[in-house]
Amino acid sequence: MKCEVIMDLLPAYIDNTCSPESKLLVEEHLHDCAQCRKLFKESTENVEAKSYDYSDTYANLQEKDLLLNAKKNIRFETIKKIFKVIYTVIIGLNILGIIVGYLSIKIGYDLEYPRFYFGSLGLKTYSILFIMFMLPLLCSILGKIILSKTNYIKSYGWKIILNVLALLISIMLSLASGFMLVFVTPPLDSFTNSPNNYLHVGNDMRKYEAIYKNFFPEKVPDDAENIDYFYRKYNGLFETTSRISASWSLPEESYEYYKQIIEKNSTMNEIEANKYEIYLSGYTYPPNLKLNFEFNDEKKELKYTAIIEKK
Image 1 (cartoon, rainbow, N blue to C red):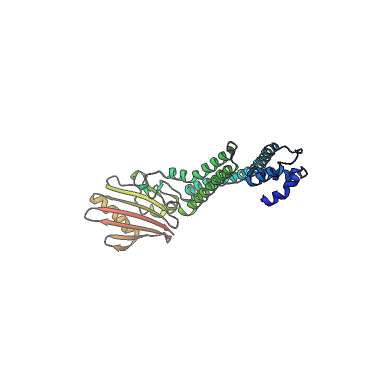
Image 2: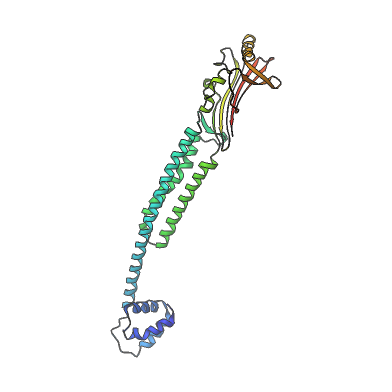
């Protein structure tokens, strides 16, 4: 309140003829303004005491502070209700995101042997995914707990600041988690190099089983040596590639037997020396499936490869 206004109200205040509201304004100003307080003192030195009691000033100010704090508390309780609704929505969306993320990886990615493509990270697939998708949920729950405990904080300003920060962090982490789920999820791999898992593959490769099982031997030959086998399904944002590769060396007789099976039952188009693209008779090939066959007469080695690429 400006000093000029208080000076206009002082005569009525001294005579105790002003309204309670004006009286409270004058008292509050006198409490804070030394200049007006001096003027008030000079104005009342030679005036007979009225029904005015200067000690009421502090009592009235305390009453006003209590009223203002009560209004702030009521306002904050309304804000708390709004925050609780927002947190509930965020928590619900995070739970839904976790379910969708799990299903997209379990069903959509079809990982027979799951791991991150960047295996050098040294962390298990589901451990990283758990942290990635659970952190926003845990942060939102923590924010809701903070909201319920703010009654212990007396400062109205700090209550608002603390809860707004917690809410913003929850929202930002939730948006970041959703963005990573859709756009930035690291490439995933389904990989095994164990001959015990020979031809145990994902659904995308398995649907061409009738073709590649007439190309690959039914099992790893009993007399095979130097066995090298792997199955890998790479899952990127814009590309999925599945590959089966099996190679081994054989004794002369077995080597010629398995080599002649391919030569008799397929059309062989040479890609490079001793490496051929294979077309089995009686099958219509999908455009994304390739069968390659390699042999080395000196080492008596055979190599079978099946590749599916989707972009």
